[in-house]
Image 1 (cartoon, helix red, strand yellow):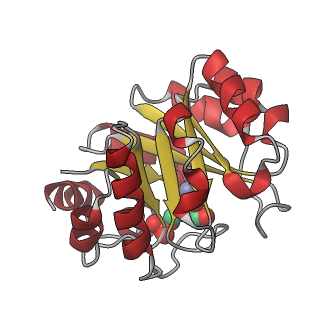
Image 2: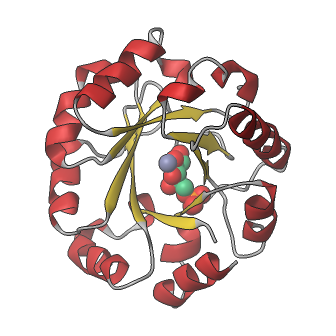
Length: 215
Ligand code: DX5
Ligand code: ZN
């Protein structure tokens, strides 16, 4: 059974409190919060201020996915905003190890996200220092895109690397997760499923989360 990380990017921000309450009353495990800067990705979303409101409306685990350049400048701000896990992009960090140390020193879990074109082998020397690999199964920047099928191969490769090194790193799959493809994703070795549109565009989000969990 995978953990479900509901992505608030697909929520209705005019009625955010209602969407938070809906997730609080669901079997969703994590709140997935997507931060975009208009530089690393071609879209702008929200930052620490909004995350502070959201984290104060839940006791669930707040998983913050930074799709931004120079994440080290904002690490402390996201800690103060209530992040439990902070994920930075492999492609955005020239000094990834230092970035991870900074996150850990502030008492948060640390994640590394990789874009669809980034091979999992490149994580070999950072895996032992992190808690989560957020594997992008779409190009980051937007919700509601289609799952890239090659991700399945990458999940299996990464699972093998993690098992070989006897680590407990979680594999989180982000982008295009649906009720139809979730089975294959979990079977390949995923531990956490991010779901935005699949949850928020469904007629019964609570039941959809439950269905994803039961896969
Ligand atoms: C995309 C974000 C995802 C997004 C997923 O750049 O990182 O977390 O919200 O949305 P869906 O599940 O709709 O593909
Ligand atoms: Zn995300």
